[in-house]
Image (cartoon, rainbow, N blue to C red; front, side):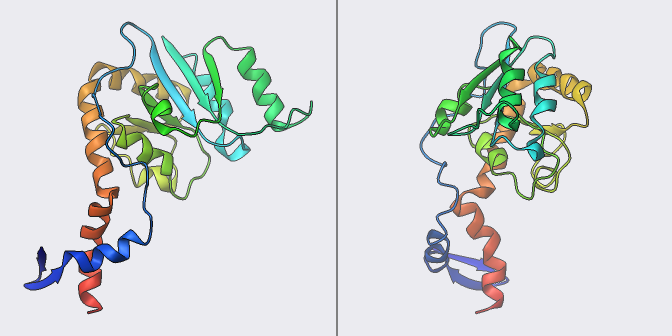
Length: 212
């Protein structure tokens, strides 16, 4: 069907061919979103997803595991260096010593990650574009993140998550989200839709029109 921008009809199918070639965000599929917590009771399942690197600042995430009633799920590397003085080994030691942390290792199936956690936390020191943020949203999982370029462009405070500055801030915002979880979850899913192929095409249409 033609879409009209500034009175000029543009064939949707013509632009779709361009976007199809980009293979954008393959995690959008037919999974269902329930907009509810994963555990009945007090436990809040929070999660961090990403490689083990100093820039990801896992130490801050580990400290957030001590927030009231929180259980931190850590998803990370396929292979780890177990050398005694390696960065990975130091993180493993911290996780093993903390009963509020569950290390799952590498998980290729995103559904096994995001259907297991209530809130995604991102503790990176810097992040150009946060793909895990969009992944979480597509499963209706709200996001708490430190201030980075990527997350600040994706998170709307009080709508689909919050920007946090320290452990105490994370703890406070976890409580706020849990008190109104269904609303945050629905908003997170809505936020993901602009990053589907249809969403990208609608964003590209004005630019596409200019070069016709």
